[in-house]
Image 1: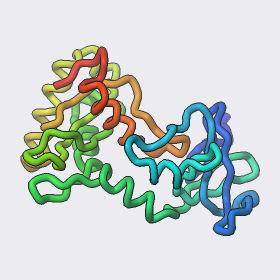
Image 2: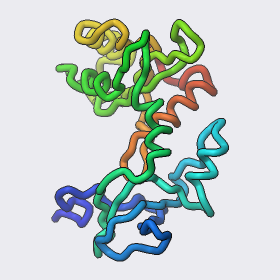
Image 3: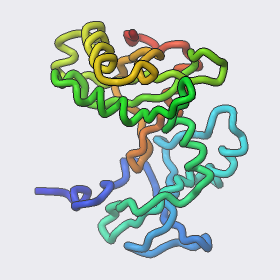
Length: 217
């Protein structure tokens, strides 16, 4: 039997330990099936933006993460995505969702889709973001974090990364190649609404220099 989270067009239900509320533009609580900004709190929510005190103060208020997503929650507690609501958050995510390399705009999603299209089905999830390593100090180069499929685990991390790197180089322009490398991870971090938290991956990479205990290209 299908659960309530399987409703067509829904974003599913909240993870265990996560509390949510829908807020109208005037700051009051929205009713069932009424769209508003989604606020969440709980142990799975990120704590703030590294090195960006202003964004942290604007986004994390009284223990609630203001997601910037306009959503509604029905009578069964099922979430439905409606739209983005905060231009300031859009600009914040833009630096992660679009890379500028050699004067060209690069979409991480295009690289992610290319990796997922690899015919051997070696991965089940992937995230691409920019990391340091460009020709100038503020230029970012693409790096991929991948979750291996059973077939990928059987083949081995090193061979999987070599095949994926070759696949990308055969299909995308040189400036879209994964010059930042490839890392195998167990899961891709995501918000309660399913948004990939690229910033978490980039911050961990910058902090550690590499993902501990994982192979990388």
